[in-house]
Image (cartoon, rainbow, N blue to C red):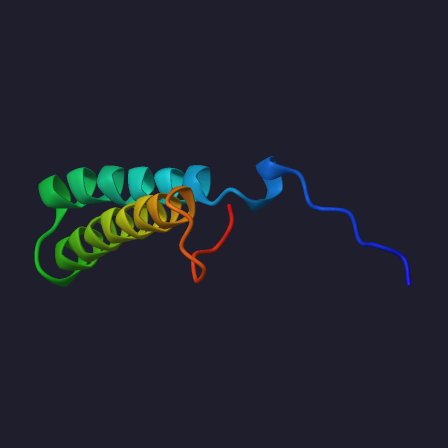
Length: 75
């Protein structure tokens, strides 16, 4: 069997995707805050909060990989 080559880092790094998604939710929150109220503002706020949770998980995984944890995903 032939060895499968590793994917380039730019294809496996999720940080830019999470940053762009979080930024979109932040813009949506600002726009919706001034144009409407209720459920849409809460949805945008939840999206923004989950984006920050995603960034925290990425940082946590990188820290675990740096310290050599066996269960950490290698990024």
